[in-house]
Image (cartoon, rainbow, N blue to C red; front, side, top):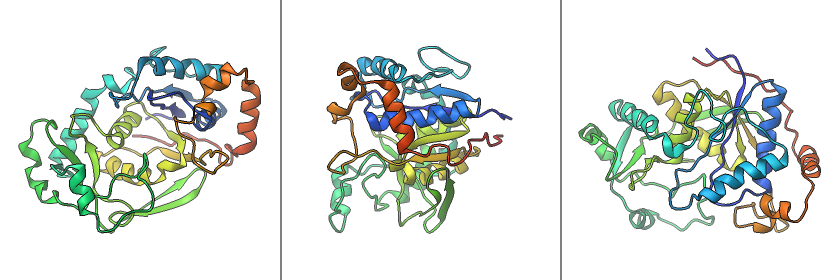
Length: 299
């Protein structure tokens, strides 16, 4: 049983990190250090089409320039290596088999066009990193066919949610959260048609295997936490604590994204920005220590 606080930095190398990433990672760093715990750097490079080696190197360089350090990671090693998701396929396959055998997932042959046609009305907001295209349950009937598949390749795989169940958790920043399966989210993607594990599965498996006790990330992933808690339960894991940081927005109140090049750490470095001033700004913007970080017991 692990009694040490273990946090993580988990960027994706699909572009240069911006100020929003930096603030969240700074909070994660502060909480790990305040708890005299360990901080893990995990390279979430599953998106092979958009991930680039130069962005991996930039993540290391830019976060160190900001004044952050970590105790384990792709660049320094550690007892839970490998720390790049592209090298951890065997972990995800094992979890997929457990979910398949447990009757929690099913093969889905719907295309994106099929899903778009199934929507009864247009949605006002674009579906971001957290929200998938709503799924109408077309292939749920395939739940009994899952064990016919020796591998996930060739089709998409979805997790069958318990419709009507309320998933609750206490967030370290936003407090008590509740989401209802079937109302707030539908059967979600677990493994992509191109034979790549989906985000929801990969982070749950990695946080468990790396013994992460607290997940610090952006508020856009609050709903993903409800999905992941269902996965955690199905896999028999112990859930970590969660703290979701408020999102940083630009002058037009638009959430920062990697397309905001002018606010990337790389650009700020090139312009001679003072990292100490940035850290001071972060401390003024986020009450990161409103709850003292602790290390929940894990089985």
